[in-house]
Image (cartoon, rainbow, N blue to C red; front, side, top):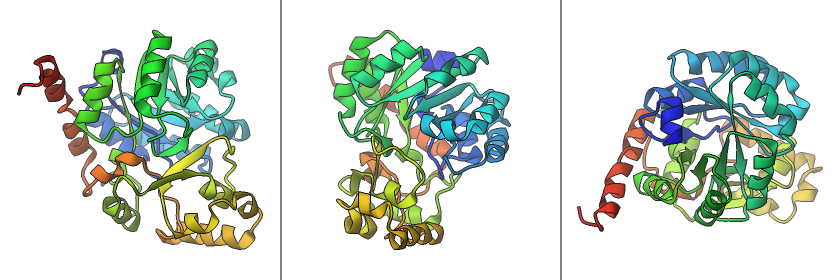
Length: 318
């Protein structure tokens, strides 16, 4: 498989870059465990944060990567400068006009990925010249589109291009990884399964809420973006755990953008880790999370994909 061969992975898994979750320690742990960890460089971090956490991610000598949002790089070009200095193995650029940034990264010897939520997104990525496409389905946690489920999207993009394609969204364990690999994906783009890892930045109250959640507890929308005023384009909502704050403001997003009281309540909820007010981004695979594992333990679980592929090849027999 391209992913495993390109980066020397023992498990064909890329840890999706999650802001406020995948810092340098989790990124390094995923890479040390046989996958490829990705640093989640959110719009609010400084270039120095990227350099510091990137150094932690790179310290073990394993392949690693960084995820950037194009709309944020437009406003914070120093983020791209820091990434070019670090020269990670993989950089994902998504959500906005990322075209100007692809060639500088490739010229530095960095493999460039983008997340596509529709076939049209994938066509654009091919024209721009990325190296790998992530078929990011609506089931996925965090930001992206809510247009197409992972499996129909993956099939369509695989039929469209010979570029390597990774699958993201709803892949909670070895069975899901086996399914997308059997379809032709080169690996899984996995976020939610790593949410509560002990090496991550997830606070205990948030982790506990994630552990308690089931697969029906997520919701997609722009409420939390309107509340945060971080700058996310309305085109890209986010899938997160439903809570009282979301229910209060759903359908009133435009009002919330200028409601200072609502903004303050959200900011305070985020600071205090109040799960009734804070955004907890998670995908529909969240129901599979039952504790606080290490990244290595999560990857060991995904490594079981071989068993399911073998059974399929043997007509379902064990």
